[in-house]
Length: 328
Image 1 (tube, rainbow, N blue to C red):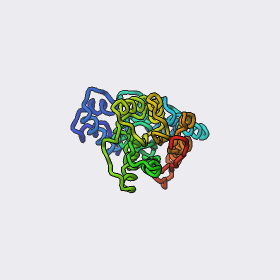
Image 2: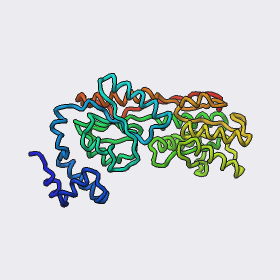
Image 3: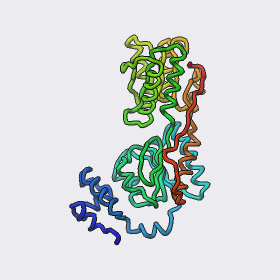
Image 4: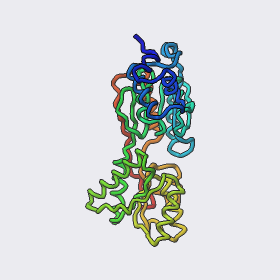
């Protein structure tokens, strides 16, 4: 027998209105209560949307794409690969940027299954929420994030291997003191790149120094400001592995303003191989990965799930390689 909202309320020991608030993202209840109710709803296989039966019989022919920002050279290339594949399959692409507001339309798209599947590039949806909505009728693909759960598939960059290669290249060039300009602490990519950096130091018997980890946020401005701050203190790194190219471009700008030559005084390697990295002066040595292909692979994986393929590998890893230019 199909579970009802009364069944969920009874099992969760809350009122029917509280169940409704939890499912619709209403802020009148606490986060703890919402999560508990959603766990019970998922366990009972309760479907809140009154149109769910109709939607199951009739596909929406739309794919959701959720991310934090419209801007950024990485997102644009990935989105292009997704868009091409989605349109090739005869589906519409519904793109939505969000910043974790649980009453937003983005949450309703997934809670009410207003799309046939979704590709998620944001941490604003927490793991528990994705667990609660993923199903055979709503498969999800997550990028740069590893989730082990039914109907959720991960597409990852080889961040660890790329960071190891970048650090190895700097050490092999004769630099034993390699700084790491870090991205946000809650970034999966950043953590794996930090792990690869530390592993390379260990491999070459170079002592890890926590003072060489420079916190930033993956933006060009943060790289610029942090490099300026180091130089103002009289600290002039000989080698830097930048967690991404945007910060590396900011580092180059600050170095130029302070008369630091690259690669004469400073050797620098970035990550991502964005288009601007080839145009900087000097051109940036970086770690490349296939961004367009990553978007294509994400969409192809999602359509395999939509079509009932039970043998989808997850996670899938996008390889990286070192592109040597003028900063090394």
